[in-house]
Length: 263
Image (cartoon, rainbow, N blue to C red):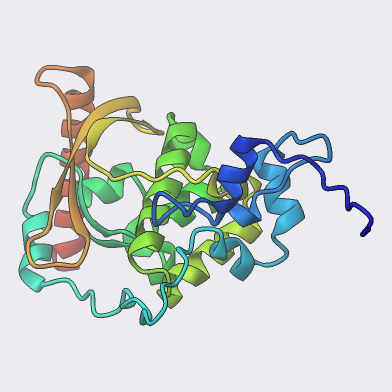
């Protein structure tokens, strides 16, 4: 008679979680979930620290499993912005407006967006990325009064991009950089939240006009791969509208002075 081999009992829920396929292309493989010896799941921050030893491995948490015979996804290259679209954004006079891709790169902006959100003209090209601004700029929580929500949705947008293009090298590098530079990013990334930017409120703090609460609407750019036009507006007659009008007049005066011939 063969000796009986004792096996630890496995709860049905745990068995299903281990064996069932992921229900979403942005959900991590169930096998990488970590649990304490007592069976309690680790919080996301400890998952990131205990499971992931490198930025590339952290990015793998969002990478959907490759199906047999599947080819690598198309990368995010070839996303050049049409010149006419840049002109459209710059022609919007009284509302901050930007065009972004799903890596949060700011591809175009008007002067009012530069005055309110970030000094884009004086930033290096790689720094014109809202994910970097949110997680790596120490002033971000002061500028973005809804920083916690902005951080959460920003990670969700990047996870959505990872589901579309899991082998985009620029996205891989961005996630690696953010994971090394921000513990908050690592925690949120391990939470598997996905987000599609649509519409909602947005709160800024500006040194010249104070707190500004706006509403944003997002429009898909026709013919472009995941490029979005985001326009921030204020209710008519509100303090936020007065703040935008002040910034618009200030930026208009600055542009006039810059374009005036020097004596």
